[in-house]
Length: 143
Image 1 (spheres, rainbow, N blue to C red):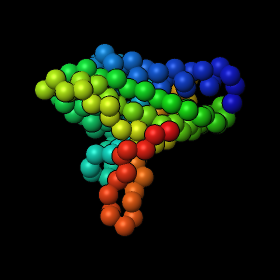
Image 2: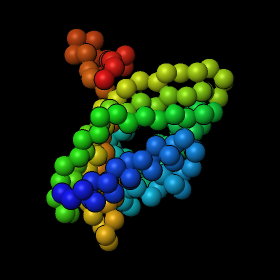
Image 3: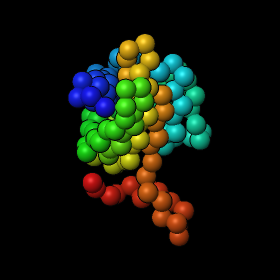
């Protein structure tokens, strides 16, 4: 993968950060493919298509007054046509009721494809570790 391609991919991830900070759904549309399949932390098991992905982000905006989104330790690999990356991410901010929340760290995997000369996210998966004994997600871990 070229340095130029990696920089473009990092730029697409940065668009997510900036779109969330601005609470701008149209800006969030840009880094995703129209047919994205997202395995997000919210039910159902999969969200298919850009409108389903944007609905998840709209749900965030309905809960948060101010949104902060941080991506840490992003690693990317790939070739000229497909790439994948993984990172830790945290959504935090001020809720509509005025309470501040530090959020939780999640694991994120991005799969990208160069479509029409542009790197687009075609799949993402967001998860938290599972405590097998209790059957509950572990949401207090730090990277």
